[in-house]
Length: 149
Image (cartoon, rainbow, N blue to C red; front, top):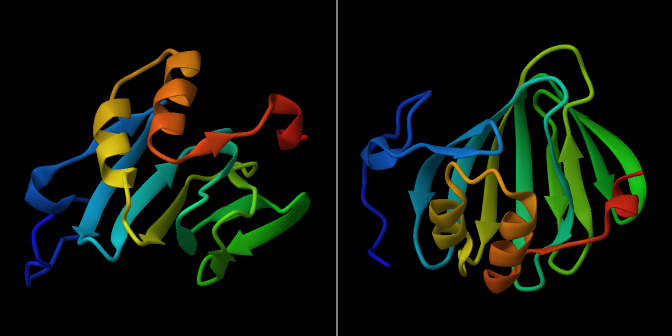
């Protein structure tokens, strides 16, 4: 992976013009190095990422607009605009937009590991079983659906 390039990734864009559509959610990569990977998500009401584990990465979510409900280590918590969620490696977590408004958040993981490569492969996929399979190959392990209750 290349060294961090100086500059600004503008609001509503990804670096180098890159954008991902992952099950209808729009992701914008903001910066990537070996040590960290930052991306923005835009979640419409009802959208979510099911409970999963990153065994090799710490993850952070800075909610910029709206509200996200998080299932964090089996407990429901809510993050609002300006709140930072800390998701240590190995801890099950998922995020859900249960509100009636869109939500926008800045995520970052450390170290980057295989997450950017995963998003490149998930772009525009619609087969959930295939998404789960590919995710496991990239060190993102989804829990059974009942973990989302």
